[in-house]
Length: 276
Image (tube, rainbow, N blue to C red; front, side, top):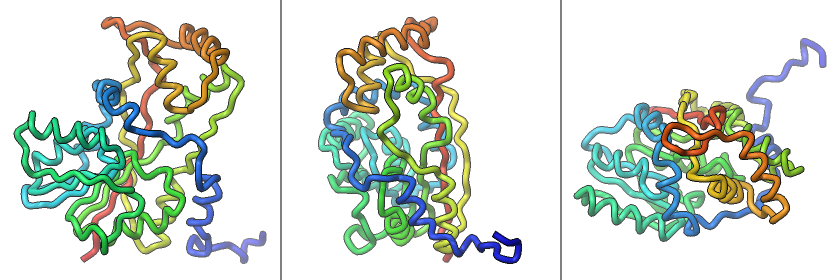
């Protein structure tokens, strides 16, 4: 390419690049979140990600909020305490049941739960909300441009979405190498999202949340169980190899939990304010 033939960033089809990097439109490893709903809160009990994210979300007592892919309410409940009304959307019945239980425990009455495919929401079928939060929930969206456009249309004030950082799967990939596999799940880089948004006329902010907490496991069996949940289809022979790998890479902390000091969550927040 000659210098005079330089491309403009607007000449690049970032939606195509996202799809190319993501790969298969229909991944083979589809998770049923109902299977882990009861365990999930325990798994992330000491995760500092929620606090890091919540520190950036701007919400007032008069705001309406929609939490997409809300899970069991780790982000939902704190946000509901700050806003006037919150819609919690997830495709897992059991996750939504847990939010209902937490609402009662916390004495909250301003949350409505909705079972729905979060990637198929738009302004016409859901209306508008002041603040939209999609926490760790849309990184697998194939039609990302359409999803982002819909979120921008639904939002009146702010949109907050989080994606994998470059080091998020580093230790998972090492465990896969230990059993002779490559990661079957593809995750396109968050930088594509930034450029895609810019090409759509949206100029977002990008922040690495700099999480410091590491995953903790009660025992080696739990480490293998959660690994299997992340990547799927681990055979008995592979479980034996994983057992050896985790006994080398995990250490017990002062509380008796097994952890890898290098296995920190790497999450990137992309957010923008709607232009009036």
